[in-house]
Image (cartoon, rainbow, N blue to C red):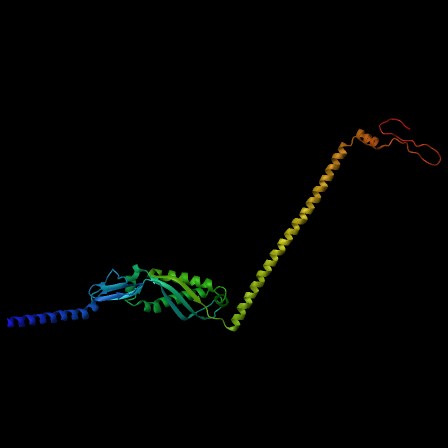
Length: 289
């Protein structure tokens, strides 16, 4: 009995050792098979035995063979900034400026991006390919504007033009540009004075346009008022003329005699002096008194 008990204890210890060894081995080996994809990223799987796999890995934990390499790319919005980017202007003056942009990668293009850039990570692509493309596009845009326009009132227009050109340039590769910010440097003293002079001249021109429009409005109002007075006088004159014409047409001989008789008081005019009487013709009476 004692011998059997010893054998049982020995087997128990042996089993415990084996289980412990398995647990320890699992604790050491398991992390080699687990890959974590960060939030907002996706992983491209490259199998050293079979090449690039079509299916990508989403965010979270994944069991992956140690013989496979995982490369992560951002599929959520990323912000990138480039300082000291040199661009030109239409008048030949160089400008050192800063660009920033937001972008993400089209999930369907991830395998193509991995192949095109030979497995390079996103930050390497940003500092090489994307920086070179943005710089080239920016130069093509800014050289259409003068230095005063680049540093002054056209900076927003330039930023939008760069964004469109940059987006069109890289979208087929799989990079989706969401926005671009062009940050022109502060102008030197002479340039600042030139910009202010241009702004002042533009404001003066706008003010003159306002005054000119105001003068036109006043002139138009006065012309309308004068035309109204003239039209009123003409209408009144035409009314009087028409009334006189109607009166003239209505003044028959009998009407004149009737009006004369209505106004006569029946007295015969007298003349002081030599006593000679007055001879009067009474219209329509056919006799002399």
